[in-house]
Amino acid sequence: MRRWTATAVAFALVSIASASTTNADPGSAVDVAGTLRSAVERPTPRSSPCPGDMALVGRTCVDKWEASLVEILPDGSEVPFSAHEVPRGHVVRAMSLPGVAPQAHISMIDAQRACKASGKRLCHASEWKAACRGPENTTYPYGPSHVANACVDTNRTSPMAVLHHNEHTDRTMNDPEANQVPNTIEPTGAAAQCTNAYGVYDMVGNVHEWTDEGHFHGGYYLDTKLNGRGCEYVTTAHAKSYYDYSTGFRCCADEGTLAGE
Image (cartoon, rainbow, N blue to C red; front, side, top):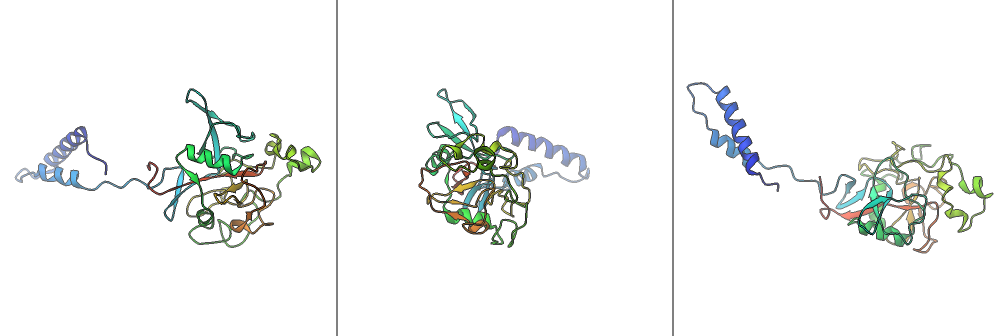
């Protein structure tokens, strides 16, 4: 519980005394001490169990936006890390921010490290699905049926077709230009309808999202239905070290383990 400082108490005392003497009936006694005691003892609102960049889902804090990264330099300073580069071999930390390119080209292993560096962790699959389906427990964040263009998953451009004549190899699928082709990814939160009452965005489409069992969920901008519809989408075919232009993530944390607002 937040403690009152001496300055705050003094300010309250002056304010209350002033208000009381101004408004009181001249013949009445003013209980300044009693009024002050009531103000000081009145409980203050509890801080949120989650930081402002996370949403409370059950007893779990879930990042509101798909992760982006900052790189931690040897002197401890931080600089933005490109969402279009492979972070393997770099010391990075996960961020949850609106209006930025979501990090792609990331393995589950590096996603785990990035979450840990921010005091968070990768989401469990059950936590991820609960956040995606929302309080109404629907197949898509916004409802039971697919709505075209509600999420970043409708009539998008294949960067492999544009850049590499549909060649799908490790080299081409990690081309830094892939998600810079127009009509591929969108900035986090840009699809304003792709959310639910929890306030989490882009859990379907945009980029795949790793969870800690080693699978990725939600599909990406070219596919949100081949391996399940919407929030039920899960890809199980790849090793935890796998990455390409479609693989991203977001972080979770147990409620109350991070400073709230």
